[in-house]
Amino acid sequence: FDNFVESKKRTAKPPELGSLVFFEAYRDIPFVFKRIYYIYGVMEGITRSHHAHKDLKQLLVCMYGAIEIVCYDGENKEYIVLNDPAKGLYIGPGKWHTMKWLKDDSVLLILASEYYDESDYIRDYDEFVRLVKEGYWKR
Ligand code: T46
Image 1: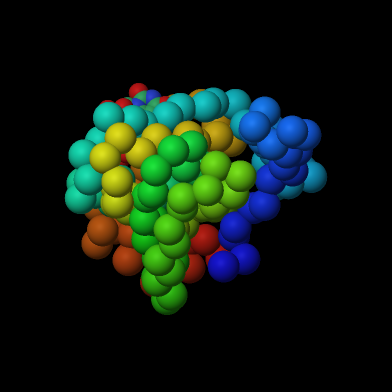
Image 2: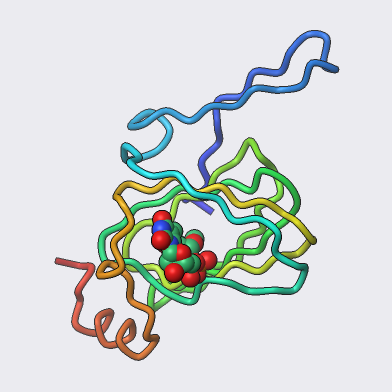
């Protein structure tokens, strides 16, 4: 999946000291983030989201556990399991996405290119399909 973003990872010596991971704007991810948020306390089997964004760019990182992301651009549907805190998933504008918790208490961290703006959301699936047909994201 070409929207996987491999972080820079520094594993300590000795390895018991763990790893340090970082993502850098324009080097690893194609935007500068203005907002960070995270989702936690979700039970296994629960699915969130069901929407697309008009302009927002985001990087999703599963800090703990396992979460399945489904991304649909109107033509192709991709299923991605995030279960490694050293890997991010880039989701750009025009992707209908859902997130399913595969494990209780998995934590999803998101870096977003813009401040929260409800008018950037497309929460109605029929509207998303209509915008894809109109070529909204091809302009
Ligand atoms: C996304 C996926 C991955 C705010 O007030 N500020 C914020 O920064 C965010 C992200 C949300 N909210 C409010 C909006 C809702 O009243 O928090 C409530 C829950 O948000 P929502 O139902 O949109 O949560 P998800 O899991 O469906 O979607 C979230 C992000 O909103 C969305 O941009 O791409 O995570």
